Length: 100
Ligand code: FES
Image 1 (spheres, rainbow, N blue to C red):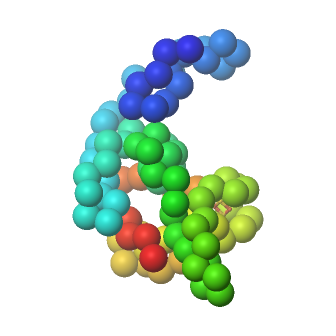
Image 2: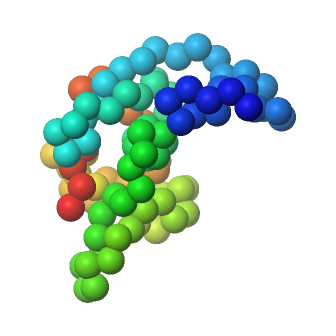
């Protein structure tokens, strides 16, 4: 399987990834390479980010859990909007993503 920036680009069942426009988003002020049509969570994971926030009670690290918008483990601030579930939020150029 071919990979590009931590992404699978040639899947044995799904085939080759179509060419997509590369854009930049910002995670806690750091530039992250993303591709149009992918979620913020996908871009972050492909860039090596595993901790998305910390739990309120025990301050434990949280990352992707359900990946379909049903839990709140991936909630972050996106473009000033608190509690945005980044696993179901698509990237856009210059997007500002802030962890807790
Ligand atoms: S990982 Fe569960 S809502 Fe995003």
